[in-house]
Length: 101
Image 1 (spheres, rainbow, N blue to C red):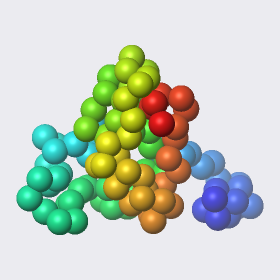
Image 2 (tube, rainbow, N blue to C red):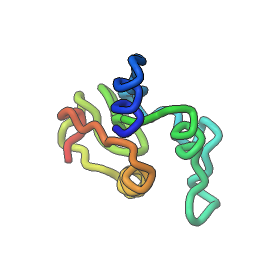
Image 3 (cartoon, rainbow, N blue to C red):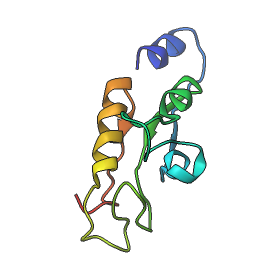
């Protein structure tokens, strides 16, 4: 928020970068969930590239929780971990009613 306000004072335009599905953080995309404790994810890298808001799921369930088409599915253990890490980094967790929890 400080960046946005500073840009406004300087007459600059700001953009908030986000995504609607955390597919990029899943195991198959180079993140280590099974053999690392704590898990090794690329979340910090995405934050450094500008990610400031993220939704864990969209329509389909993934390893983090249930999507719109599976509203009864809750956050998984991995989903709860990612939410905590997002909060630590200052990434807004967009819940928009897409997950069951």
